[in-house]
Length: 222
Image 1 (cartoon, rainbow, N blue to C red):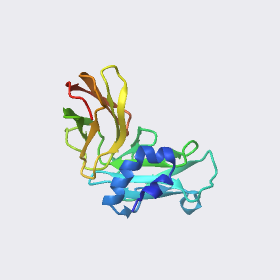
Image 2 (cartoon, helix red, strand yellow):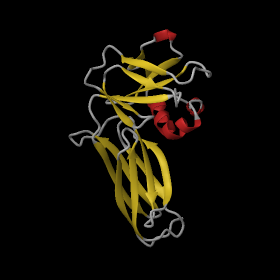
Image 3 (cartoon, rainbow, N blue to C red):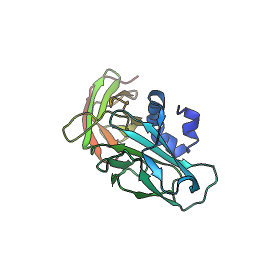
């Protein structure tokens, strides 16, 4: 199980970005043989750890075997034998689509831990719903495929609530559940100004953003 302390051991910045995702995966899935495999095998200073993120998602953490490793390293990665060549790989650490399941180099020269997501199709976008409910803004988020169907798996995103003047008053790194659902709420600040607020949600798969207007009435936050 991925415990909070274990996640923090991966580094403060990494745990901030992906803590919510890894806690969800750790609570709902057992580790499995990684979808990504190091070309160097046992000779490598790194290791791959695989987790099921849901029906559509496999996650792989690439991290050092020991605390002290050689810097400036690029490790070759290939795939578990049953991975289809048409599957797609997302570098969540770099926030970009790596491409189809072909061998590639994992750049560990800047960050010593990287997180990848493998899916059988490309994620096309985010569906976002937000509305004021008393002193909060309720938020619903899901990733979707090309058919506008929900991606059934845990995937990370970042959400930020902004006042009419553009100032951010709330922000969180979040993750969908293993079923692909995400429901949360942002508390409005005391004496929240009425008007057109905005909720900005960023995909941590490819960096694309969705901005949704949110009408806030004269109700003051707590």
